[in-house]
Length: 135
Image 1 (cartoon, one colour):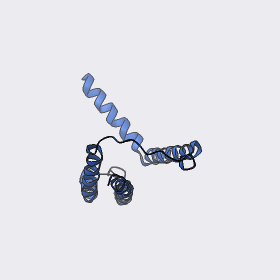
Image 2 (cartoon, helix red, strand yellow):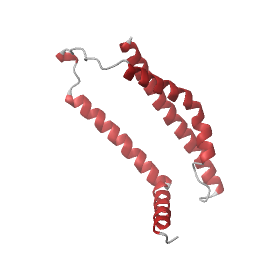
Image 3 (cartoon, rainbow, N blue to C red):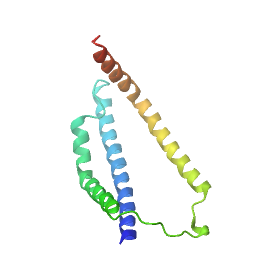
């Protein structure tokens, strides 16, 4: 049962990640079209569009959280002995880390070109001036 639950959680995690990525890209595309047609004053992401776009992911997230609770509630178990030929090689885990790092770097670069850097800077300035009391 535990092995089946782990496989189900793995599949659900991949589906959840794919659904979030698909929804964010869809929201970005729709917002970018609106941003280009209406001018740079219109934000690409709005709170209402984001909530409406991510609402359909909520059932997947609830299932994922329930599965995580079930796995934890099952208690700690010893891992079965892994045969040496089935162990993950350091090169494979290094490639995975490198690919995830490149993906994260690509999203950071996309955010900078999107104007996200300016948005973060403006928000940081507003927060600092409010805390200090200059604004």
